[in-house]
Length: 391
Image (cartoon, rainbow, N blue to C red; front, side):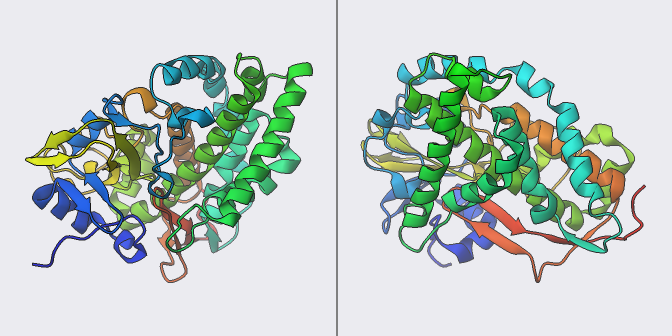
């Protein structure tokens, strides 16, 4: 049997990494890639335990492979902080990202979904992502933050450019960095305005949270990027996976109470962000392998979600699965602050889709995959529907 090889930059492997990840779980639960000098954990227990141990598996030296090495905690960005700095900042930003902010969004999200899906009425085909799924999370997070409606589409495309990758350097490239600067500059200006002219939005809450100007701007940028990119990938997988499982899709169309569980199963089955990086602060021995101190470690949550040790028949998509918690939102101190919002968007998007289209097909020949070292999914998903399928 061929030697196991995996790296997050290999587009061919990324098309279907699950067989490789299964071999890694079974044969090399502590995998070492010599080319890029990183270790990788794939078993659910190991990935969860590492998430819960920030003292050993630090975020301070980066969470994306191509950016790892330098101390990024000095940037003040919450994603690169360990306790106690992370604890203090998380408490501050959590005041801004309250359940109240997300709960009041239900009608707004439903209105966004209905408007975009109704605009496709009468068409035999539309792009589920470009006409709907990629726009929805951008509209929602922009609305929550308080980005003016007339600017939202411009900044959706700017966020897309932030995830632009190039061979050998990944997301560390001129186009990606320029887009990031563009977004930060714009959000910094809005936060400055909110200090003197507050509104009922998240940017105002961040402006008043006691954070530095830089920290407020970086957190707003993180929310805009993560809230746009990962939910878009979730909705792309929703269209593709349910088209491949028409019997289960029919059950969801007939009974919307099954949809929240289906969203969790989609997140487990095809994690939108399947790889997170950490840096070891001490030597760690796992499965008779020593990971040295000062090592890059990738936590492959996409592999953990298919671990047969936790999920029976793990490669089977099953909306009726007895859901044990998945790791697609992380665990511990870096658990996704926007998880409730992502679940809300996924549930309502699927409800509103199934109200109008109980069936659809995917034109795989024209579907376009999206690939970065940390995000996996589609950027275009052409769906074939009956023009008269609205129920």
